[in-house]
Length: 518
Length: 100
Image 1 (tube, helix red, strand yellow):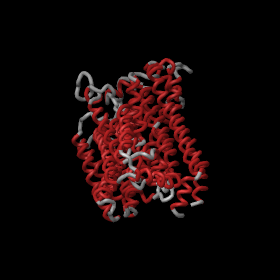
Image 2 (cartoon, rainbow over the protein chains, first blue to last red):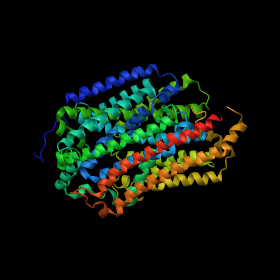
Image 3 (cartoon, each protein chain N blue to C red):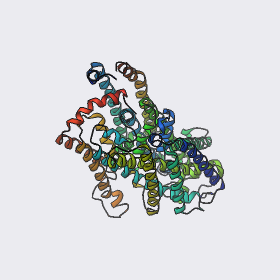
């Protein structure tokens, strides 16, 4: 094996991947057509008529969460940095048990379509809905930018006959079709198919990789250590500053429990028990997926070689693709490339649906119409919001072309952890929480997260090229999460709300027993 | 559904209160366990690099086992909660709901 030079078709148009991608789009559009006939009411549009089973929703949750960025990005990070990539991926998993223990069941029992429903259950509609929409839309926007820019650059490599702009527009249009016509039902099935393809594709890749090592992961790690010394098997520069690592860790952990498109999924199942089952299934699949990416990363390190991976992309993003060609030839590369494309489509569809729901259900119906809106009118607004948000996503993709947007996923998680998670948790657990306290906590959480990241090395040093940054940590969560909790606590104690306290007792009937849950 | 007074009685009943406090004892205990294990791992990575690099094979080290172990641990912990909730919690919920 000549390790310094590799032959690859990556960067050339591979007919197989184009064909596979078209098959995926054709099948998912057919599902959308089928789902469109079943999507008339608000409950159908936002929540698939609550017809999704716990297991299906578990797969869909995993599909929503396993983005192309985590597949290609984490496998690449492992390939280039070894063990550090594992530390990073663990952060993305540990939020799921927290959702199971603290959030899933009360969320399902108290809400209808959005997490703002839970907050507004006993607090004042208007200010709460506005504040929660800000938290939701900020999270969605930053997440969308990262996904759209990633999509454009990835597709440019996988399908070189497409320009960046064309790629962004195609992703935007197909995704709009899913959500606009098929609502949550189509989005859920796109998510399930994509999750099966991604887990299946990654599993085959791992099996084919391990075949080269006598089916022994230990042998793979041994060879990696012999080739690149023992350092690849232990922590490197990732945790040079423990506060940085803890701050990012908290953002990932608690942010997962505050991602609007994830929270929204819990309304697609019939009851709290199914909600609980679905997180268990999702946690299992996501954990399995991160173990696969770890092996894929090491496989690429040994079989493709860090030098070669680095010539395509310094961050190693092409590692999984190069490995798939190495072990399975150009046909398998085509398959994995098509899966990566499908992954992007599914994730942006989920994001757009949850953003559109915040606009129509939280802002239009409960703020502008003060809760008085008919079914047909609300669905119409939800569809318009989908179209608007879809076009917004395409524009974001075009505007941020060529920009360094890697930090935006971290920012989206930081906002979700500091704006959405504290208010949601406190409204479930704390009787004395008030409207003012919640609104202030969301505003302080999101604005401190944004402000601190602007002052952090992530933007000041890496992007604006200053020598040093004003705020020392790369991720703001270590400060912004406590700031949000503290604000909720202080402001709530200063603004007593007896009506909300009284409703807390009544709420228990619904949150614990599921009486009256929708 | 019975009257507000009876609903109030159920909410005030020892049985209901015990169920709520048990639910949060279990949930908060498991949350704390997850936090301790995860943050403990991050601090171990930061301050006990040598310990994690201790070899237990030709090249395999403790850190490798711990890292993969945390992934499996997270899933098992979720499983423990789901098992408890399906078998214990839901039973109590069902019993209380019968009275409404």
